[in-house]
Image (cartoon, rainbow, N blue to C red; front, side, top):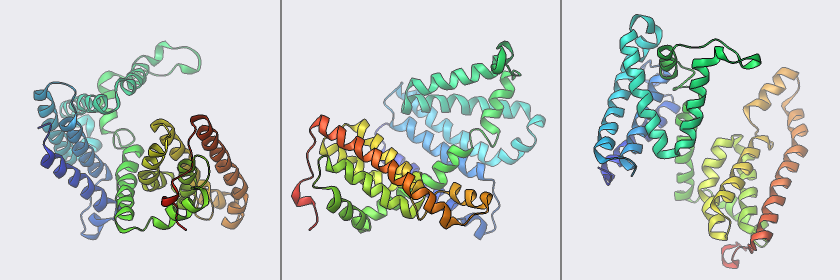
Length: 323
């Protein structure tokens, strides 16, 4: 099962299909009213099953059992979520069993994919919630009973199926698809060629190309998530091939993509809220953000240049630079 490419392919297709249908609003078109949490939990269950199938950690029998249990957990909670979330106190046994099952499976999936560090952080947060009344000063709070805590972590709309999972399903996956379409159709060639022409002949050209490409794409997307998902698929391998360390390449792309929502003309959603709250025009907000965003990218550009000098990273090969 560890080498089961057909199974993982089917699960990956289900994740993609779930994300595309949900982000496109297809359930509303056909009159199918569902909770957003139901869709998010289904996608998470598919992803957890993939994590267990592809992971080399732990015995094979547990990987198989955990993958099946993840799908069963996702199916059960997807169907029963409206009832359990609205009337959790009337179904305490079912809610607790589902929550404990999901919590254990999720912890193991996180351990397999992210390591023990994130488990340690989550453990500290849970311990604080359980013993908050024993702290003093500003850290003191009301403690939560273990059964209530684990039920909240799985069933509450602000916990498992909260903002982070919503962004992953509704934003990250569709934009990963977009980035692959750009790669397949050559639509990203304009940004790549422009960045190559401007920075390819400079020291550490691969890093500077990534910064410029993220700035250009960010100026029309206004989203850091879509920026890193779309341009990162191209620029991170380019930087690694050019001589940057993998962690440095990821850091440069993350910083450059984050600045994309600060770059006019299309900025992040916060810019529109700012204009509304200040009763100012969006043009005024863009003008106010122009110089800070340019300074931001200048600082990232300088870092990439200094890192290239330290690692002796040269320019991009001449044959890769458009005329």
